[in-house]
Image 1 (spheres, rainbow, N blue to C red):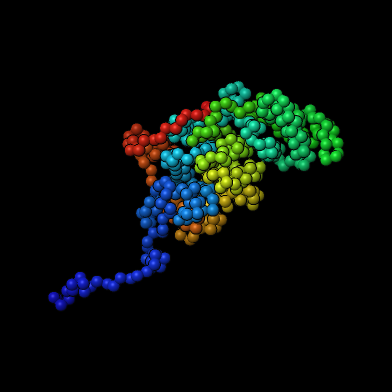
Image 2: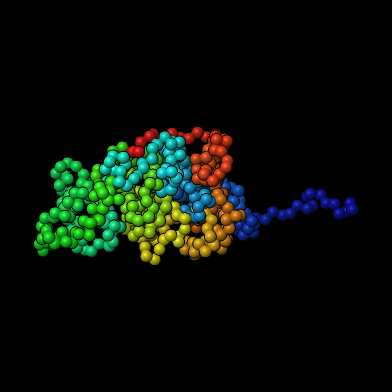
Amino acid sequence: MLEMLRRQTQTRRRAVRSTTSHACGLYPAIGGAGMDPRGVIIGREAYSGKAYIYDPFILYNPQARIRLASGHALILGKSGYGKSALEKTYVLRQLRFRDRHFAVLDAQGEDGTGEWDGIARQVGITPVRLVYGAGAAGHGVRINPLDERIPAEHQFKVLVSMMEILAGALTSQTKFALAEAHRTAAAAARGQQRAAVLSDVLDALTAPGPALLGQQPVTPQELMEWGQPAALALDSLCNPSRDLAGMFDGPTTQGIDLDARLIVFDLTKLPREGEAMPLLMAVIGPWLRFGWIKPDDRIKRTLIVEEAWHVLSHRPVARLFEELVRYGRRLGLSFWAVLHHLGDLLLEEAPEAAAILKLTATRVLYHMDRDEAEATADYLGLTDWARKALADGSNVCAPGRAIWQVGSRINLVEHIRTPLEIRLTDTNLRMAEVSVGRRDAAAAPMIRLHKGAAT
């Protein structure tokens, strides 16, 4: 028995020298390498337990550990698995950095109040609530597509997009008549020292003067006939008796603070179906592009679009947002598109939507049904383990866990929230039996922002 006992020095193994690259292959159970240590903590990497840190602006820097091609993100997954909680906690944590500003298009909520209402109140800002039919009566917020902050050439792009949403594709003759009416309306408004509005364009369309198409004279009667489809579409936006009136015809409502660090546009009172939401998206994208984003500052801005299929599934809107997203690096912009699943989109019929999705360098994927998980994995080029994980909503991709595809790296990340963040981001209060008042307060105080937005 004594002969079988050995001292520690006799049983010590020789050290194995290896590089970190080879060690990953020798010991495959070790979790993947982490991201850049700068940024905000999202949670922990599920297999290694290490903190998972993310910031698209830092990762775009050439000195970053992982270099991203863009700062844009796509968030996909079924309801109830953590998409909204991720967006909100990310914003709350990023607001602690002074050079981070956010605009949120909040399209979900209950009782006529958006999901971001609680966070807005907590940080001391008032959401901008948009309602059709109320602008003329002074009870709602109006956004002028011809606002002077939008350059004239982009104003015309917005007009064409709005008309295409309402009347279908425009002929070359209709676009010519609309361009002449826009030019006439802008000149008349400048003479009165004010911004042009949609009713000015409608008046110019229905009572045009003579024009020239090159050297060819065009009579007022011809212009009136060519512009009839656009005139009928504009009437639905300008006529007080029409359902879509009140939001776009007139000067932009005073008091909308585009310099606020957090701007929440509450869209919950707008109809989900029909032209209402695409019309707003067609206007608000360029409006934010030229009014909110300022090329001469060093602010990093993030635009979060809930229910982003309203942007991606309508070609006129997707065209405007594609330009916004394509020049995101020049503008210091990170665009977040939030969807339930890619099945909402007909990508073959909307090449602009496909282009926007390809420009996203970060994809955060929550649990999906098996068929949807397979289609998403094929489109995004996911690995086999990630493909299987997406369909497992009980274990691997349980609520709060998501597949993060950041550049070439794919990790399973568990989102971690403080007690206060849980209270502010909980969208299941109606179904839950736990009283919110019993939850503990967070140790870290919330940052109060300056109040500055129209109600």
